[in-house]
Length: 245
Image (cartoon, rainbow, N blue to C red):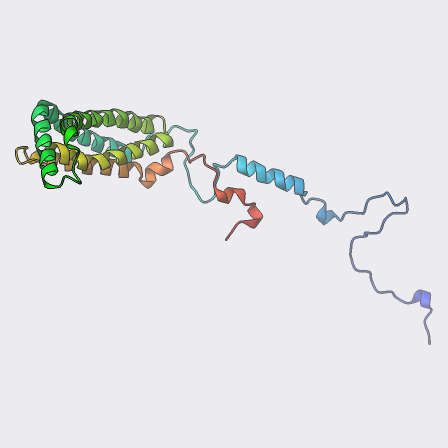
């Protein structure tokens, strides 16, 4: 017994979007399935990427504080200031002694330079410039010490009061320059048998306290309290979908 073809059951058509054009004409657009209509366009994705670059301070790999709200400076900055004060006191002791005995120190340096010319004339200072050098270096080094102290303290204060990362970085730079000059200053000013050895100890105390002060300003608590750097990082130039794992 055969069944009428018109009455035979047909296979159900799969549920798929109709992508055929309507009969209105070739200018009509394709039908867009509902599940694709909410996807952002490429222009919208690019706009989101640019917005993320503009808000560069919001980084997922950093947990910075809310910089719009006032927050007390971390204890490390207070400790850094105390260490700097100790270093400044040690430096002032050396400066006061140096200016009080400037003539004697210049004479001692002159004798050392004369001895260098006699022992190794090829590597010594020019003989005709020994007097000028021995009279120039001691006061120049003492004045430079005072200038460095006058620059460092305002930078350290600005780091705490203005919450300035730039002031902190410049303070560390000035401390590094001072640390490089301290050994040379101790050698030219105080490394003589007639000068009390305690002054060289004071110089190394200044060196240690300054170094600790700079290290305290670089601690993690201070770095998280300060605003992030405004420099553009290479990772921010990579689109979110293509970041390196």
